[in-house]
Image (cartoon, rainbow, N blue to C red; front, side, top):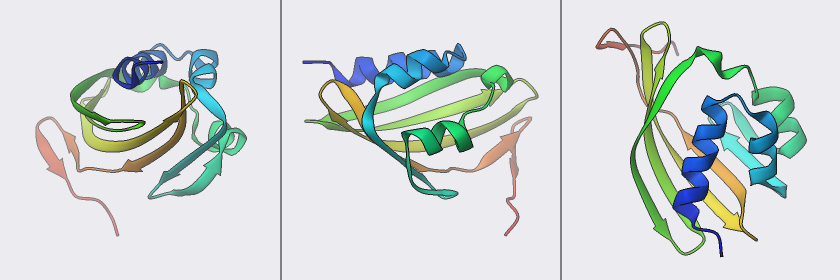
Length: 120
């Protein structure tokens, strides 16, 4: 059985390395993605709509991962190359050693240590 925490860490490393194939290989064929901007996207729609060159990411600092069975929460701080940062929490579901579902919950954006209010 695949270790969910290792799978999450490997997935974040693949994003940082801009390795689309490695990310695709980690996602189940019936993968679904939801965020405040995206409702229940399938794998093809996720890559078509959400995948971008990740060169703008300086690093991800994974702050915590909680795993229970075939589900996990991860909270991370993403630091951009331009000084912006944001903290998100994602809920993962796993099946067959792959990521079956990710639900993203956005946190506040920051730049140079200051809160950036979001437009409504």
